[in-house]
Length: 255
Image (cartoon, rainbow, N blue to C red; front, side, top):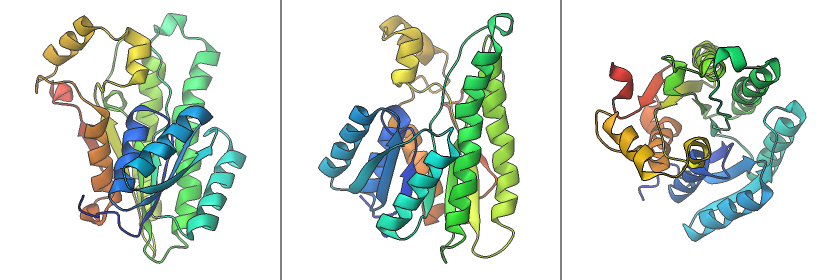
């Protein structure tokens, strides 16, 4: 590893599986002290062990990203343990495929509370902590390719991820307004083969092959592909990047 996160402290939400877990492990391997959060305590403890096995330093904290009180606890415990916050990865999310006519208000509210309210609270409280850090910080809000284009039967999800995209641009201006500067960017994964996708479509070679054929680069996106993009945005390599929407989708959004 290159030590691109040496001396930095990062929080990664939704780090109990998939993109969040891969990101937490990679940032720790690159030198960051990582706080990995999520609702599943057993899976979170496993992420903590995986960070240690990778030679990194990190801990798991249980968190409900829709609760401001829970967010404040995570921020306070991070600052108490490590003294600062350099990188915030708002990755926790909820996926829903359902036609508009079948989407209930409860469906809409659940998708919105996790994908949008969670990102708002994470950005708000992380930015406040980073404004007390002389080095500032970097906030990465994980949106989706569906935050830029439409997907049939997924209006609630597309709306929520679109909100994350626009919110991140506005937050980037707030973060850049005065010293210390806080960068805010949105990240837009395409089809990434994670547990969330398996739960929706099943672990089926036919499905995988279909997704590969539908992708211009003719390969399946993996959690590590997104983790590498997060590493770039969290590190000083992207020090001149804010308000951007970085798409990692194998070319699916080019049409």
